[in-house]
Length: 343
Image (cartoon, rainbow, N blue to C red; front, side):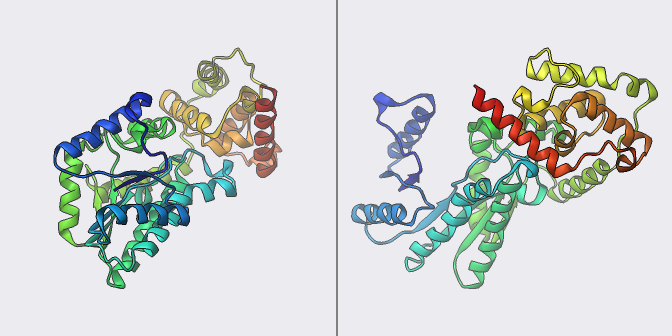
């Protein structure tokens, strides 16, 4: 049984994305599998129970194994998140996992395989909700093992050609940002299939699958955070041309003839946009300007002034140019909402 929120249409109504999934089902059937595809939201207990009853009526009571790979792409930085964002992110991996375990507890499947992510160890821009959800899965598998259940959580590296980072536009953008920092290819489907079988054979509650030394990657992520806390020192020439160069980056990204006093959110900027702009600034100018700084200083003029003050070591609060951060963030959100309503 294959269970998903969207199910599969018939061949006549299939688009490019669903056609690939239909082909994958056909390949399974050619290999001798009997496949039942059902539509249900795993975080909805009623829908889940109904789907399991349908499967039992066709295949019988026994369930030999479970692969839980449901998830939702993230894409918001912390300061732009709302409680609804977190509830949405928790549905598939947290609520769904707990409900699935509850529904199958008396079935005693041979294995309960949960797909987690290395993001719960390494972090990633705009992925705090996704990281938290996967961290829950990691701890949950250990707790269930202590109760005698054959559950394993696998922290996958990024996949190539398939998977959420490949299929989701938001996740793909964030993946590209990560790629620039880590510079390595993702897991290929054939590699993933071998790793899947190996993870089941190990009989561990948790398995990390990384294409590079994961300990080094974790250490590097901590070092990167330490580096980001200190301002990268710019030369006087670079500081003198900073406003112009920032202006060029924002103009190019938003395809707008904006001026230095135009609020980013009036241009329709989202947290994902600012995350990408932050990456471009780092790559082209060699200076880290975190997204939260853009929220607090939402024009090129004020952002330039803040960076220069940081570079000189001046106290922004004493100089009187550091606004109330939460007030600035809320104002940015409101400006973007107003602009979206005007559209």
